Amino acid sequence: MSVERVDRETPVAHDDRMDIRLWLRLLTCTNLIEARIRRRLRDRYDITLPRFDVMAQLHREPEGLQMSELSRRLMVSNGNVTGLIDRLVAEGLVTSRQHPADKRSQIVALSAAGRAQFEAMLPEHQSWVAEIMSGLSQDQITQIYDLLAIVKAGAGGNDA
Image (cartoon, rainbow, N blue to C red; front, side, top):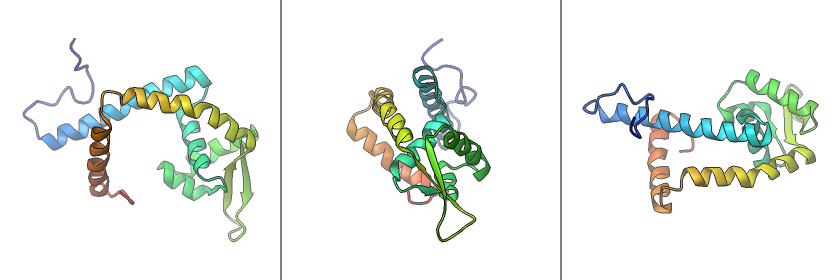
């Protein structure tokens, strides 16, 4: 079989609409990249991608985030995040405190141990992403990034 492996793009004829082909190409690329990163995180650090993603969001906000904001950034439901946060808190990697202005809301942040664990993984994760993108020049990466901002805005994404 050629480089064109069987994936979401396979059933699409070359004369089909280019917008549909692009959408399927984006899905395929996302799935392939996610699978590679997932596998490497599991094999190297025994961590799941959702857990890494939560830690990455909290790493960007040292003062912490409200659970609802964390869910929004991860584009998942509050329920999906709650179970993961509960486990991270139980392991001492995340702290949780009541929001001072809203007693119904929690603010979660990386603990010192969580920050250290995440920072130990970060350089290797960055090198994996660089390796995946290594076939592109920096100009091409910038172009794709800028073009995808237009797609994101068209899909209803905020802060494109």
